[in-house]
Image (tube, rainbow over all chains, first blue to last red; front, side):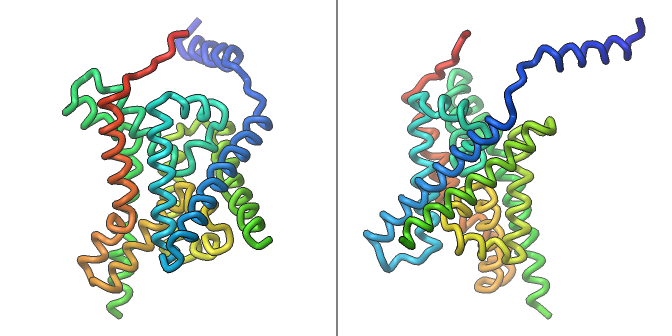
Length: 151
Length: 123
């Protein structure tokens, strides 16, 4: 038996053995979880708006983001968010809560490697690519817009 | 009634975005981190062309909370910076618009990790 044949057989074996989650149900759960988080964010926004009616929409949005981030990190610290993430799949990591959770969980996970190179460096294991890509795209958009506005 | 409708719209839009991500996650073998970056890029493009603003006006938090909204506010911040502050604003505007969220994520995570230890499940 040659090597490629063996590799192919192994891959087929892995495919057969890996648990098949019924994809329609996990799609539904992601929909429910994502919708619930966004609904919750909308509620926080309404509460903030009722206390500060003069606040503009952009600032309210920023406060909603900050509230969801803070709540996610606290839930992650108590280990509750893992349960939600297991249930919701993409419904928990696509909203900003996933970004916050990835930083908090990596920080807690790598605490044993020290505060400088453990926490300080590895808390960005997942969030780093998001920040790097996001800042790069925003700079690109800004520069393109600036050049266009010159003419 | 208008308020209830707003919640329904937020639920619908947020849920559909997450369901699309879940579908990509199941049907292809793209890892979650790559999907995050992909959606972020999508959001930055939509924000750059000023399209996502309409969705935000329609669905509220359903459009701002998903990572597409994060990309959108990065792009919108850069555009706003470019109009008000010229080239300097174009460079820093995106980070300025999202700085509070990133700062809270980093600062609070650092604080929390000092008090919490990892609960790795061994099963």
